Amino acid sequence: MTDQYRVRSRTGHFTGPMFDVVTDEVQMPDGNVAKRDYMVHIGAVGVVALDDEGRVVLVRQYRHPVGQHLWELPAGLIDVAGEALDRAAVRELEEEADLTAGRLDVLVDMYPSPGCSTEVIRLFLARDLSPVPPERRHERRDEEAGMVVRRFDLDEAVAMALRGEIANAACLVGVLAAARARDCDWSSLRPLDTPFERRELALPS
Image (cartoon, rainbow, N blue to C red; front, side, top):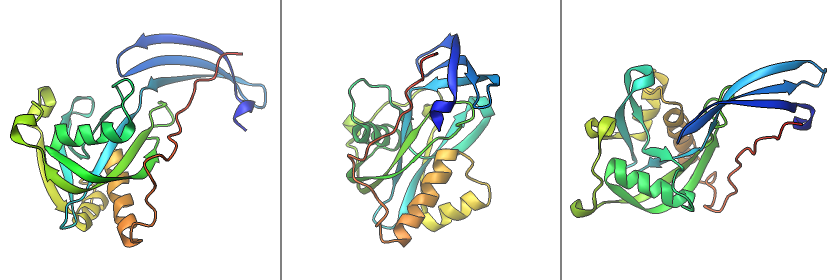
């Protein structure tokens, strides 16, 4: 039971637009008290976009913390106040892949690093893709300026994941979940109003 883990105190170390860093003193069920450092993250959305030929849209982007270019899903932060999650997903697809979608379903939710972060990511399956008109396309900057957009057969993307060529956690989960959903004739997909569970920080006792 989660109520057996009581937060006795919290110390903030850093506050930023994407996440805060805190340390909690947590009383365990046996009475022992341990310190836990973690990020309080605003969360994100990602899109597994499949075209009519069964190809998935992936983007290749430089990620400075790991010093590598990674194959990823079009994705981004939940950082626009009042924006619905499905709209955030479509916005990211438009900005990063110059595509929009006629159909969106909830694919899966995931915690990519639950040992050190509250971040939760909702992944959507996007279909009925169409290009964004040139005059409406987003101007990509910084790392996104060199972003490569490619389409891979979904089974080839699964093989890439298993060969270690896809290392981004959300991309791994999204590609594998989409392949499984396809093999189940999409019966595992969930509606857009599926509740999105986000952790509320426990107040210190």
